[in-house]
Structure formats: structure tokens, C-alpha cells
Length: 239
Ligand SMILES: [Zn+2]
Image 1 (spheres, rainbow, N blue to C red):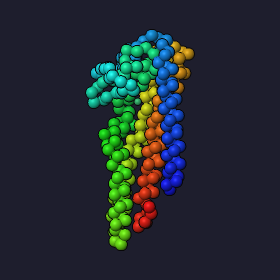
Image 2 (image 1 turned 90 degrees about the horizontal axis):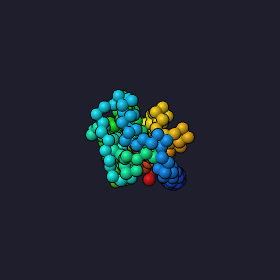
Image 3 (image 1 turned 45 degrees about the vertical axis):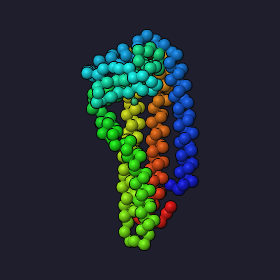
Image 4 (image 1 turned 135 degrees about the horizontal axis):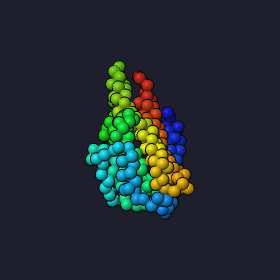
């Protein structure tokens, strides 16, 4: 991927991410104004969903802030944010059911979920360090122009492999997130946590949240292609 193609790709992903963020914000805000038909709170929904799937030993806690909702497998806790914890809005129910969906994935030892958990600790470091290793490889190649060794190329390849861990993480994350939302939607429908006429809205809100992971994957793919170009080919002197 040449620099120009990379720039165009980066701009497209940036604009797309702006659209996705704006859409998500508007959906979440709109859903926060809708009181769920069942009148149940997010906490009750989590408990019912876990019980329905025989998941035990999980506690629900409040995590102050916005978008702080998450399932922590290590702690055995589902954290719910300000707008979710104890709330009865359609957004709160959908978000809570999504997080409970992760707990169910974990409980069922869903393969992709396990892979995501395995990659998660390394992914953050890999995405930061990988590109620097590739650049180091390029610099070494430039200084070693007269040498016949391919050490710069080899280092560049190592950097790409390191970054690939981060790419894999995003690749696995997307279906895992979609699956958690599908589980949430299925149970929302089955147990009637939101009214029938609120269901389709709840689904679009969950989709909007899932789109952010598609953006992250696309962004990571572009970086990966760019790193391949920066490393260049064996013995090549591309810049
Ligand atoms: Zn999730």
C-alpha cells in the first residue's frame, strides 16, 4: 500500500468512525429516553439473563462514568455505568444484556471469546510497539545498504508479526461483540424486557455499538498494509 493509498484509506476510516460515533451517540441518547416496556432495571436483566443460562458467581457493580460498562472475567463482575446501573431505559437494558452476553460466552467457553481473552493482554502492547520495530528495521536497512545481510528486513518482519497480534485481536473481537449483541437481543425478545415496539430500536442501538469494532478492525488492517509497505521487499530499498 503506497503512501497515497494509505492516506486515502486513513481518511475514509476516519470519516467512517465519525459517522459511527455520531450514530451510536444519537441511538444511545434516544434509547436512554425510552422507558423499557417491562419496567425492569438493567441489574434485574443481568440477573435474569445469567440465571437463564446457568451462569453463577457473577456480581453486578456500579462503575461511575460513561461507557464504562464491561464484563470482567477475572473479577467475576459485570460493571454497569451511570446510565445503565439501576436504570430502566431501553439503552440500559440493551447494554446490560450485551455485557451479560459476554459472561454467557465465557461460561460456555465459546472458542472465539477464549481467543479474544488470550490475545487481549498482548494486543495493546503489540499495536504500540509493532510499528516502531518495523521503523527500526527500515533504519537498519538504510545504514546497512552495502551489507549483504537482510537484518533490517528480518527486524521489519518481526515488527509486522508483533503488530499482527493486535490485528488478530480486532479480527476476533468483531464476531465476539456481534455474538454478545445477538444473545442480548434474543433474550430481550424472549423474556420481554423491552416492549415489542422497542425491540427493533434496541437492535439498531446494539448494531451501532458493534460498528465501532468494525471501524477498529478496518483501521488496524490499513496500518498492517502500511507497515508491509514500509518494510518493503527483501533487499529492496523502498521508502
Ligand atoms: Zn461487548
